[in-house]
Length: 337
Image (cartoon, rainbow, N blue to C red; front, side, top):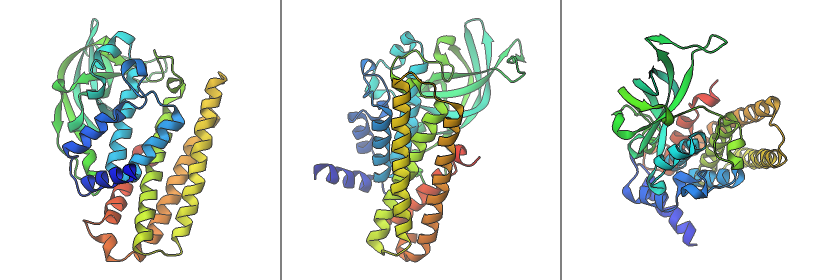
């Protein structure tokens, strides 16, 4: 009962919020949710893949912005596995207060200067931007004014972690949903960053099984549970307003997709425990399943929405917020390709 009361209190605090109230941020920190994937010896929860996915889904079912922000920021804190151990200790010296986040796009350059890089550019879509202590970004590597290339001719790219003091926020997040995720853009201008604060995806220094998962699979699954959680919230609110026959299709689809996610996460954990390679075909299967799931859920929500009355269109009603949150979230590039 206490948990239900807390969830209702959190949902009320998040309803209509353009930015999370301090009570919500304090609760996230107290529950150590920024660090669900971070190893215990760095102050994290060190959850398994299956445990973490279930946690994220529950948060998103409470509120879309809440789940989305924790998912993306804990997903950035996951990069602790990519950092050299001494660098990880420095970045996570106050683990409960350390919040990483940033952009997956390559929107800037890093000029190689000996062991340092001079970074400049403007990056879009940093979820939780005002809540962050550090920003992550990807940049093309230049040296002596020229872009460095890989053997296949593609530009060399590295990822970096920068303290928020090196970043200027551009407050341009103005969407119909996920408002409290405040996914602003940010600018970096001639920031001199040591190479030890850079990393490469899928190169890990931590031994935990979570870091043996291909990053594309990790990203697919963590976002997928967000869509499931928001849709479960929509279903509950819709049934309370006006139970209609078509809602059964949504309920059945959600049950099926929950089982899919569980099977995939447990299969991945079993493969890693058995030291089996996660094949390209399996990675592609997960991505296709996730994409099709989101399409099915979107169709179900759209077919039900017209029958839910004016309440569902009122800005102060949870149905309206979850509808707007869900269809803002579906614009993420992973599932729009």
